[in-house]
Length: 169
Image: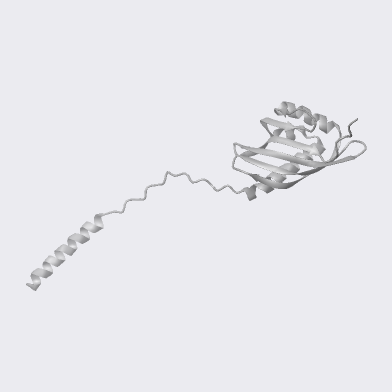
């Protein structure tokens, strides 16, 4: 009886072993879920500040092509005491007028920075020196940056001086 039990046990164990070894674990199904990289605003600030430095330097050197390339095609500039200027061609014409003043120094300092994956807002102050008399102007600015094809470009730019308004007559 013991021999019969042992034979049944060995046969059963062997069958299970053969069947178990023949099974394969299915490969994991690749995920089709797209995981977006997290939006990291703090990592974008140094990049925008570097773009601001290039922007101000281009005004001093008169590099209109550099300035023009920093704007979106449908960009708008909102200069003080003037109508909005819309589109790169019109902005380039305005830039030529400002460069003609003889800008000798121009600095912007970002004071506030916020935004989303599509738009960034860079708000700060500026100091500008221009003309033969080396007039110094201080003021504030606000740039709205728009991401296009992975590159950040200026979509809207507004600035105004801190100088008091002229006295009314």
